[in-house]
Length: 564
Ligand code: HEM
Ligand SMILES: *[C@@H]1O[C@H](CO)[C@@H](O)[C@H](O)[C@H]1NC(C)=O
Ligand SMILES: *[C@@H]1O[C@H](CO)[C@@H](O)[C@H](O)[C@H]1NC(C)=O
Ligand SMILES: *[C@@H]1O[C@H](CO)[C@@H](O)[C@H](O)[C@H]1NC(C)=O
Ligand SMILES: *[C@@H]1O[C@H](CO)[C@@H](O)[C@H](O)[C@H]1NC(C)=O
Ligand SMILES: *[C@@H]1O[C@H](CO)[C@@H](O)[C@H](O)[C@H]1NC(C)=O
Ligand SMILES: *[C@@H]1O[C@H](CO)[C@@H](O)[C@H](O)[C@H]1NC(C)=O
Image (tube, rainbow, N blue to C red; front, side, top):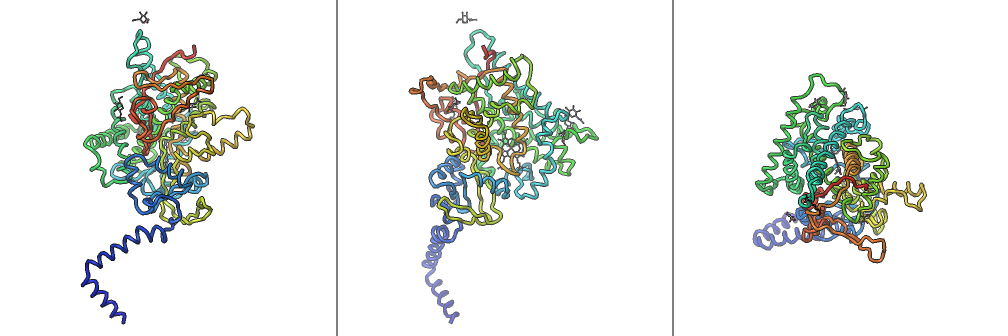
């Protein structure tokens, strides 16, 4: 009986091959386009567009086209707090609980991160996916990156920071004040590109931190060596291919990028080799560099270099972006009051600026209220890493959809929160697109208790450095480095947008409220760059892994004697 049936089937298939193929194809298509997404997938009730439900194409294509973060942001606006991104991936928003569940309770990283391995795919802190492997690495170096080690007066990091920030102030003085300020009536080519300058600061700091104060770079004093920053930038611009299409990397990279990539690797290896040749035979445990700590733990050669390279990539572009947008926002005519208020705070604390002096009191700088408010606000609207930080669900995770229904997100699903969107929740950050440092300070009519409650709530939604165990390892050094730089710069100088760089957008900022025009916010996504003429257009942030400015530059003028 059964045999007959099988036989009949065979006969049918052999006599009607075309029809059979068509039938199989149709069943396949029906299954994947209809039955699976609507009846079988555990994510079938998660809202979102149909195309995202059935394929990975839109997610990949939008990332390649650099419009994905804004797209996900818009999807949340349209479909609610939980949306489907691709057949196996969801994005969640709107509730700090998600940050706790995913990042603090620590779902392992998704495969996205695996491709941040360096020097022949060797593992490192950032790229390790599994929690136990990550913890093992973290134990080796976490004490060096701790706030107490960085602030310690007997450790070398503190001196490193003060020295490098001193070099920064000198570089700005030379380029903006010395070179042109005293030249009578010079009006052209004023100012300096702070994006490259801040990248130089960050690379000098991080390389000395990794390799020892004597073995790091000195780009701040040696501008002719800064080309290596441009090469790093070119490699970083390939992040889509590096992380999502690694097999097509070489194909997508033009000869320029291939060359930049070679330059970067060669440069890094020679930097490390130089440091290796400069280790005291019996080094003391104090002032251990990152490299020495790894070597002591048995991680040597290229296995150790992968960690260093990771820090160089993770640490210098992000820091440069943060500082650039901070100084940019303070230099916009519309925000002049913010700059003045910061300068008042600094002068009140450190009295009038003195030529050649550098503010070196890390503890005071760390606790300046207005400086902190500015730092928080930049971290909110110009978070250098704004997009999803994807994790993999490793045990079934129950979530509540906006319609009240509970679903269980199955093991293996990719899940993420997008800082860009969390930072722009209207009910947590009123007028969320505006740069308003005051939202981090106590309002006039607010009790201390209400103020503390509000700040605690706001902080719960902030993740410029990520959250939880995989949070930025370099955060303590980055934060105090940036605060020290900003404090010193605005103590000594005032800044303005460079007149020769672009058309400066001025707004009627008169006190008469009727005709006050609201300034444009600096948008994410190159589609907003318009004619690439005004400062607002030139400072459009790339919709990419990092938000580097549209033209990889930001020209500011710095001048002294702002107090008169
Ligand atoms: C303003 C500057 C910086 C920003 C905004 C920033 C941001 C971030 C973010 C968002 C993450 C988490 C990524 C994720 O979970 O997907 C991260 C991780 C990391 N960052 Fe940073 N970072 C900065 C500076 C630095 C510096 C200076 C260093 C090194 C000295 C550094 C080293 C790392 C490392 C090693 C990780 C991986 C940590 C782990 O997986 O345990 N970062 N950073
Ligand atoms: C100094 O740095 C080392 C790591 O090199 C760290 O173990 C130590 O705790 C630091 N000292 C202080 C006082 O923080
Ligand atoms: C660590 O570095 C600091 C500052 O450079 C220095 O004063 C101290 O002597 C160093 N400690 C050791 C044990 O080398
Ligand atoms: C600079 O400009 C002022 C007035 O515009 C003029 O009196 C002065 O001679 C100029 N100085 C030089 C060096 O050209
Ligand atoms: C680099 O320079 C420091 C001095 O700042 C030295 O003690 C250290 O051993 C050198 N090399 C390495 C690999 O850190
Ligand atoms: C600063 O400029 C922004 C434009 O990004 C504007 O919305 C904001 O009101 C200004 N902030 C202050 C405190 O003037
Ligand atoms: C924007 O304009 C500048 C000149 O003002 C030009 O150098 C730059 O390439 C332009 N940027 C883009 C992305 O077209």
